[in-house]
Amino acid sequence: MSQSIFLYGLIAILTGLSWFKDRQKTKKALMKAKNILVKLAPELLAILLFVGLSLSILTPETISSLIGERSGVIGVFIASFIGTFAMLPSFVVFPLADTLVSNGAGLVQVSAFIATLVSVGFASLPMERRIFGKEFTYMRNLSAMLMAFIFSFIIWVVLPWL
Amino acid sequence: MAIIKRYRALIILSIILLGLSLISPERGTQALSLTSASLIDMFSLLPPILVLVGLIDQWVDKQVLIKFMGDDSKFLGVIIALLLGGLAAGPLYIAFPIAITLLKKGANIRYVVFFLGVWTTAKLPIVLFEVAAFGWKYTLIHVSVGLIFFYLVGVFFEKRFDPNTLLKEDITSNE
Image 1 (spheres, rainbow over the protein chains, first blue to last red):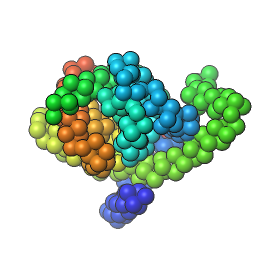
Image 2 (image 1 turned 90 degrees about the horizontal axis):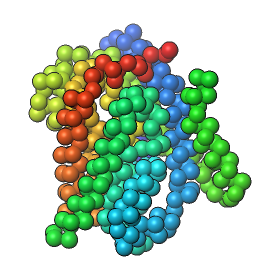
Image 3 (image 1 turned 30 degrees about the vertical axis):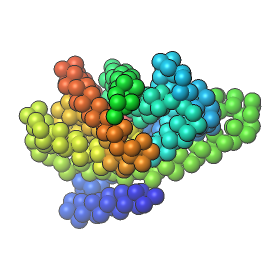
């Protein structure tokens, strides 16, 4: 909430300064902002619906039962699958991950879940495609998924030594 | 037909929501209230970010941005991407309009992709949550693996993509 007030305040000041210096440019800037919002509205609404659906279906208990400590590599795949489809506000991610581990989920699997959750977005694919095009979008998401596998593998191998 | 295609995702999701509500009215209403809660989340960050994108578009001189994040910016490009992504807030989709604007202003794809990577793995406010949940060793591994990996992805994307094809669609126009 305070984050939002700060951001709105900052942008209001910047817009004010811009208006003071050049009204024409400021009008154009605001029109552009409005155009992006209108243009991406269907994609944004899809993201919102997706968040609502995924949160109501995937409760912490459900996730923990799917990616238990002994679920191994298959658990890592299931975790990345869930992370790809789920979409959560970022400040919820780690408190949730903590809850998952205390509910019996494995840390390695939870790592794959976290990494895909924040960087691979099934829900935002339509929006990303609209902005960057098909190829860029799919390759960025695939590489983010690869990062999730590498990261959870490193946690698996390295963390016990530290 | 084009209209149906545009609203495809929205239509499919609405059908799923309808189905869920029929199977379990309780879950259905819960999904709906979670959706409206996230609408509020979205509106707490997205509008000012879009205005910022508009202001950048109008005020930031292309030559200046090229100096900071262009082909020859070298280490400066990395630092700027780290600052932009690290001090950010919110989900990744908010970063997309920023990223495309940077690209339009002449930033090198490498730094733009790296910026998206920083946004996902090294956002300062979130890193603090991470340390609290899993400790600093875990966090250090996560952040360093993420930064190295996404920098390399950036290098690869720079070779793979032509900026002009990525900029084909202008999301700030009203057509």
